Amino acid sequence: MRLTKFTDLALRAVMSLAASEGGAPLTTREVSEAMDVPYTHLAKAVARLQHLGVVEARRGRGGGLALTAAGRHTSVGQLVRDLEGEGEVVECEGDSPCPLRGACRLRRALREAQNAFYAALDPLTVGELAAPPTGPVLLGLVGRPRP
Image (cartoon, rainbow, N blue to C red; front, side):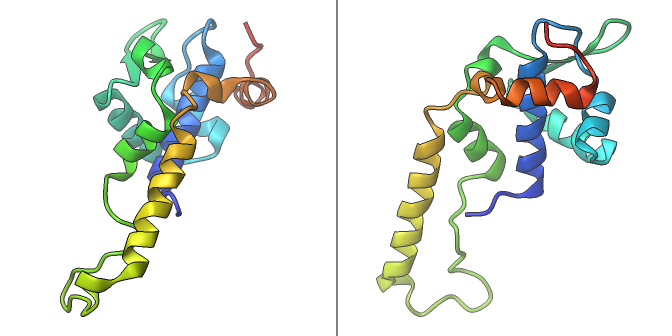
């Protein structure tokens, strides 16, 4: 299974936020520069994370991005499901539906593989994404000392 760039950006953003907890909030600009991605792309991912209740954004002096309490404990598997959608690995519909649709063993096997992929991510929480050695490296990218 391959994740979309959007999901990749969102996951890297929450990893950065998890690593920075306890310090000054990171801004979307700081995270986009550290990740070397366009600000507008990251801003869209942050907006989706806010909608999902994983991230909160505060404006003004002392503002920035922070994980919510619920976001810190969110399952990575569930977050990826929410970001990717519940679609199947292959689309059997379309302009000319597959004639094997009702009797295809491959489709079932791919659905089971997709479920196993998510199940492997389910025990991991967003907060755990910043455990060493990852957290210190992430903080080094944004140029901030670990609290």
